[in-house]
Image 1 (cartoon, rainbow, N blue to C red):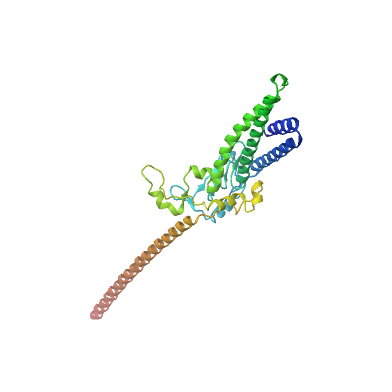
Image 2 (cartoon, rainbow, N blue to C red):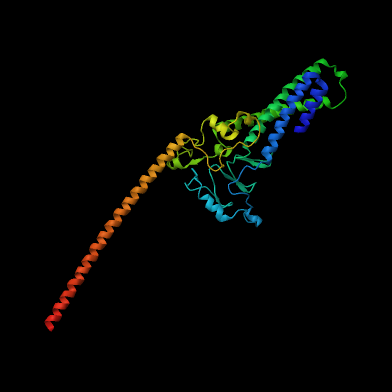
Length: 341
């Protein structure tokens, strides 16, 4: 589809029909956009999204994981996850035998957990996640821009072509039909991919993934809010997106810090994909929860120490009375023996 669109527009329309400096300029712009679309597509398709546990075979394949299970469990213990399951427990993947990091989910099609998983794309035949999401966003943007460019240029060319050409002089070829098909397809793709790309731009600027937007991300600092849901089943309005750091930081977290790097699908991710910065509001709630847990733990410790010390005093007192009774009984026996003697 990409090659066909480039040949019909860039070769047959720009170079062969329009020609001159104008045709060469239109050809150059179309070729650059086509190259960026192709580069972004193959980068997003061939770059692994990243997995916390490496490639894991399916359970019914009769194969073992490529990583030792004990090392995976020990590595999982070092995770500092701030998201939880609905019951408040840690997020654990039984298929990968691994504690899920924040924003990671298991993909049944890929057979592994994916870091910062957005969704599984059948058109790219891979998951979109931590390492290839930037290339996917650029693919959508460049595709929408290129198709919009071809729609406008091809539409203007078709208008002038049919206005200035006598229908009887049009050659009995498929070229005009190809131009019309190109114009219609480019217009449809511009609308569809443009809307889809705008949606992902919104998610990127809000620091959401598709899964996080569709599902409820449970923050460890808001566990009490989940237990007090409203009667209609929806979460309380005070719940926030804990990963939203502001539009600029959200953008640079995915696209990189260098403005020139925003235009090319090169890797520019931060960190290891297992730990993510959280907002100041989330930090405050997490600190409040930890302080509350510490006070609760200290209260239990003090209560336990008081009960233990009281038990020890009672035990020592009872033991002392028992020893005194034994001594008295022994003294009475000695006195009685002396009398008999």
